[in-house]
Image (cartoon, rainbow, N blue to C red; front, top):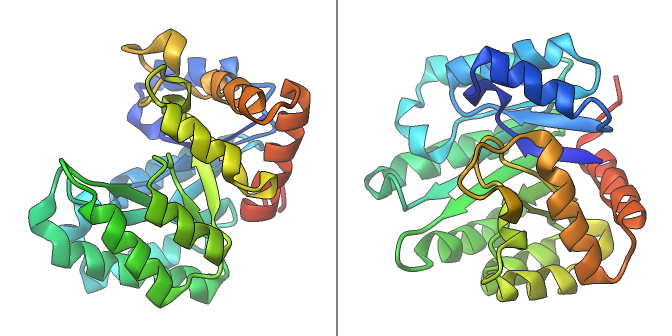
Length: 256
């Protein structure tokens, strides 16, 4: 199985080691950077293990950090041989709605960088009390049409799903797919083409139902995978093969 989105650098060193050991049977893990310091930490971890890869980017809640120096740094890091995506980028009006303009500048830069390097983009989208970020993200996607992208921890928003399907997005599902009250999200997962499905943990965040309230880690992706298999009427092994193949097609995880 493949965890296409986690943050191993958000863990303490001992926790990171335990998480990697517990997921040693995984096909691959993608650990995702969010700012200049964390990008380097993610790459340092990926360099140590053949099955761990990295994404580098500037999270929308850190968009105010964007500068010519940071752009040059991110451009340099993105050419590291273990980097397989740019992001996570996107729009977050939940934590930092006041940085909306900065978020768009960071989003546009990372889109250009990903295009120049032929790398997929990983999008984070979150609103507070409305769906403004999702609506604006859908509009931005329609206007800019990135060649390959992932809607990370997809929440099931109808417009974002509509535009994503039209543009060939990958939809990555995390622990919330297993939550009892998320029937609408499970219905969305039922409708998305099989060749566009990914699974992730977003560890140490978004743990699946049996572990809610605890720290997440890549080995727990099996609970989301099992729920996705149940939704689609497939065996765990079938869904594992499908999502592994999709992760390879999207990120080239495993390719040197």
